[in-house]
Figure 1 (cartoon, rainbow, N blue to C red):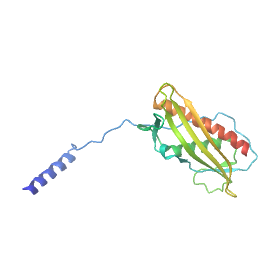
Figure 2 (cartoon, helix red, strand yellow):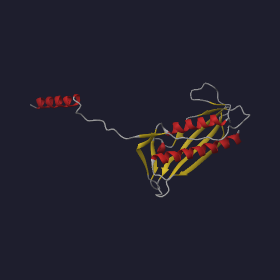
Figure 3 (tube, rainbow, N blue to C red):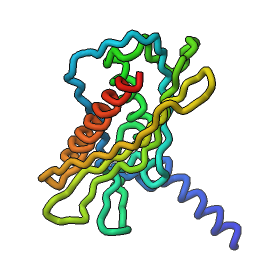
Figure 4 (cartoon, rainbow, N blue to C red):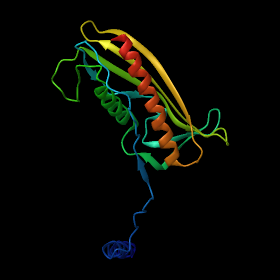
Length: 201
C-alpha cells in the first residue's frame, strides 16, 4: 500500500512540473551600475621612458561584493541586493585607473592585461573603503579610500606609496546619487594620484 501511495505521489509531482505548475523563479528588480570618472586636464609631458603595468587591485573583504554597501552606524553596515555594481568593484576601479593613467601622458605606455611587453614600473592598489555613509540622516556621503604602491621592476623596490581618501556629499538618498558621488570620489583620487606620480617621475 505504501509503495502505491509513493508511486502515485511521484507521478503527480512529475505531472505538475511538466505542465508548468511547479515552483516559478522569482523575478527580482535588480539594477546594475558602473562608476564614471571624468579626466578634463590636458595630457602631461614626461621625458621618462616609463612603461607601466597596473596590477589588479585588491579590496577589503567588507567591500568586495558587487552589492552596494551602506554604513548605518558606528560599526553597522548593510549590503543592497537590489542595487549592485555591474562588475566587481576592484576590477572596475583597476580598469578606471588604467584608463586614466593611459590618458595622462605621463608614461611611454600603460600596458593592457595580458601584454607581453616588459614593464619598467608596476602600480599596485588596495581599496580600503567604498561605501555610502548614511549614519548621519541629513547628510549622506560617499566614501572611498585607496592605497597605492609604485614598484620599480628592476630591483622590485617601492619608489612611491600613498593613501588617498575622498568624501562626497549628496542630497537624494538613492542608489543613483550614491553612484554619482562615488564617481566624484574616484575622480578626485585619480587626479591627486596623477599629480603625485608626475612629481615622482
